[in-house]
Image 1: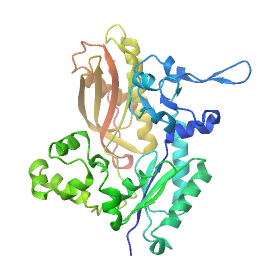
Image 2: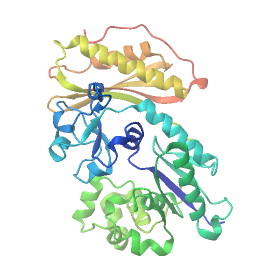
Image 3: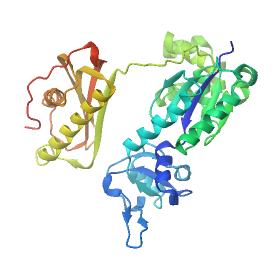
Image 4: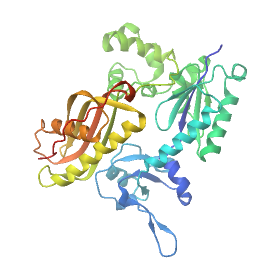
Length: 383
């Protein structure tokens, strides 16, 4: 049986969902980010007034952007203040994660009706094992992938890009080659012409630091990485990573499509519109902290997990970041227990600067049925 793996990536997912709600914005630069106060405002004539990026004032970051906004250099995780300088005329919309999760469920259900072997990689992307499906051996999976794209659009009204290849590594790169609304098939014969000219960063797993170390070796493209001496890569990156880099550049990847993956942790965090003082803004910080813990507890219960390790993340006004962890005697999904442990972590941090970001994390997760939750005594926060 010929192995054929597909990677499906929804096109500008959050922004595309918003365009279903506001079709009058199609063709315009749109950025998703900011708070609820940036909701469109109804006008007396029945129209809506949309906030433009030029009007934004705060510390938020872009969640995603339409391709029209990306043409100006705006991308995800970019500070909205910088995005406003690049594209001040862009429409700014707040994120609606409940709506995005709904459409995520819809597109994944549509795919499962055709190809049930799916690896969920997040809200907007999946891997699909096409190998055993009828007709795949004859055309390499093109017909099935086309039908998947058609079913996704019928179920959601949204477009997606699909890459089909002999393995997950190449399938992910293939799905990015012809965005948006692309369908790209890659075989071993296409490696030199379509994959090797790409920057080494396009290999999933090579981040900015690894790319900089490769560039210091004179390696910028995947093709140059493929021609590098394996011994030199091992010397620079270590045995395991060096061997992986060599294999990846040659398109080798034997990872299976994993239909169920247990998460190791869950977290929630928020970036404040203005930096908050740990004493003068204690009440606002306490409310935000409690809300994060409650939302995180809801996430755990909804997905059926409990955890033992509670952690916090603080980012200060000078962008310094600290984390602290506390391990409970037993597992929990209880908001009060998470609050108490997070508060203990907080007491171990010198709160001398204003806070820019606050986050809470629960790690060492286990399915809820395998561990009994505990609910220790609640202690006050920010006291």
